[in-house]
Structures are given as C-alpha cells and as structure tokens.
Amino acid sequence: MLGLRNRLTGRQSWGAKALAASVLSLALASVALAEHVGVNGKPSVDAALVSYTPASQLSGHLTIAGSDTMQPLLARLASEFRRLSPETKMAVQGGGTDAAIESLLQGIAASRRGDGNVKGHLGSNRPLLLAFSRPLSAHEVAEFRARFGYEPLELPIAMDAIAVYVNKDNPIQSLRLDQVDAVFGKDRHRGSPDDIVTWGQLGLRGGWENQPIRLYGRDKRSGTRTFFKHVALMDGEMKQSVKEEPGSASEILAIARDPLGIGYAGIGFQASMVRTVPLSDGAKPPVPPTAESVVNGTYPLGRALYLYVNQAPGTELKPIVLEFLKFINSRQGQEAVVKAGSFPLPAVQVAKNLKSLTGSDMAVVATSSQAVSH
Image 1 (cartoon, rainbow, N blue to C red):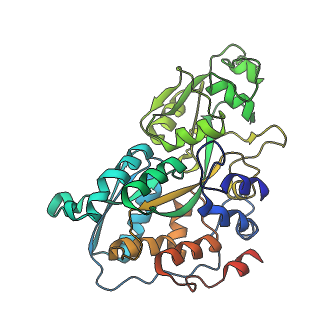
Image 2 (image 1 turned 60 degrees about the vertical axis):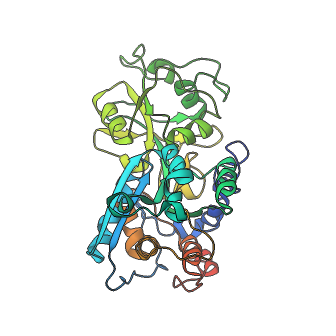
C-alpha cells in the first residue's frame, strides 16, 4: 500500500511525484480492492457499488478522444452505456494522450466559449471527454488554468498496469527494472553497467545466447510512452532502435509475430500470442501485473486511467456527459472495465468521483470509511 501511495500522491511534474493527488484514495482503499481479487488474479467489482439507473429519454451524441491505450476500454464502456440508453450515439477516437492535451487546451475549449458555439456536424463531433493514460503535469494544469481561470475536471475511471510483453515462445521468466532500463534506454539511469542488446545478457540459454533483442514501443504522442520513460527509464531517453508503433494493438501484433521482440503496453492488450513478464524493482521478488499487485504497490508500473472535461465551476455538464460519467462510476460501468481487461476502482474512489459530479455523498452504498474498513 505504501508503494502505491508513493506513486499516487501529489499532482506535480513528472519529476517529484508520478501520479495525481486525485487518486490518493486509491491507495487508501488497497485493502478493500485486494479482497475483491480472486485466486486467479481476476478482479471483481467492489460490492459497495450501486447499479446505474438510466435517465429517461436521454439522447444526444458524445465523442471521446485521446489515449490509444484507453480505446478498447472506452469502446466497451460506450457499448454498454448505449445498450442502456439506445437513443444516444457514442464515438471513441484515438490520437494519443499528447494530442488530447492540445485538444483540451484548444479544441474542446471552443464549446465552452461564446465564440465557439459550433453547431451541426462539426459541433456534434467535437470531443467533450478526453482520455489520458497519465495525469496532467503541473505545467499542463497551470497552462489550462491560465487560459480558462479554473482547472479541468479530472476523473480516474480505472486502474491499469504497463506490462512488458514478449512473444509467447520467449522463455524469459522475469526482469528487474534496471534490466528493462538497459534494454530500452540509452542513458541507463538505473545504473546498469552494460547496454543490454542480446537475450543471452538476460540469462537465456539454449540457442538464445546471441539472439538480438528487438524493441517495440509507442510513438511520441503516447502517454504510455511518457509514463514508461519516467518510471522505468527514470526520465532517460529511448534507444533509437525502438520501433515505435502508432497504437498498442499494432505493437502487440508486432511482438506476436517476432519471437525476439519485447515491448511495453497497457495490461488490457493481453493476447494468446504474447505474454507479460513479471517485474521487480530489485529489492523485492518479481511479480506479475495483477489488480492486487498494482494496488498494493508490489508491481512497479501501476497507474490510473483518466477522463478530463473542460468544466467551469458552477456550470452543469451536458446530460449525456453527466450520465455517461455516472454510468462509468456504477456497478455496470466497473464491470465493463473488468471485461475490457483493466482493473476496477474501489468504492472509495467511485464515491469521490460521483461527489465531484453530483455533489452527493450518497453515491455508493458504503462510505469511504466503510470501504476501507473491510
């Protein structure tokens, strides 16, 4: 629990603390979530969450843009939401986290200003929610505040892990973060004395000794890439030999086709032709990326996934936006999170999210203190 708290406290730049203050309560609820993880590591939704009641006669169009990592998750959430509110239309777009930041500062801002009341086709396709696979940095929040006079509304919607993937036929059993740094990074800030370029340097034998390590990763628009560089490489630079893919799905496909390949992506991209490698920070035994290991801090590359909206204090969200966010923070919404391969939020964070949206403390059955005391 302390490990995750250290990574999830503070909303500062990518130097002092890694994740945002808004998810500190995720760490405080680690015991609650751990109790809802089965023996096979598959998470289940917190029993304290209430079911979503669809709003009557809800209609409208909602476009969500941003993180490529979050596309499968959001597509699942949008599909489940439309099943309950069939008169709504949902569109989920990628483009990357960094592109979403630009949209947050420029694109969707027009929908809240008098000079940007775009109607018709263009207006209906304007993103109202933006998906980020990392929290905004202090600089990005300050830039937003300078433009609009307030901070964007931030909601964690799921937990995630950046996993290191290899081909299913690769026999590597585990990796330390200093080895990961020496494989992907050219600066080796974690102290490895040697650049690691062959599988034999990682201890593989039986014909693997001189086989080259072929690197795959995400492009520069990706928040997953930013997070991986900051945490795994300690802000070191990527090797030029990393083949950067435009999306996590294409990266995983490349590794599935390459027995010598290795890459990193969100946990939701597991497939039969690849497998994840247990990781260690060097001080503790290696652990696989599971809901329990992410929340208790033993897995070193855990994170939260976010939705952001440009919402001025004292103003009301559009009904379709509010209802979709309420749905995500319900039993059905968090069950969809699990189906998409991500990890669900504990009730304490859901309660905090819904209070931000509705102002109500009665959003879930259990209070924060009850959720933590399980």
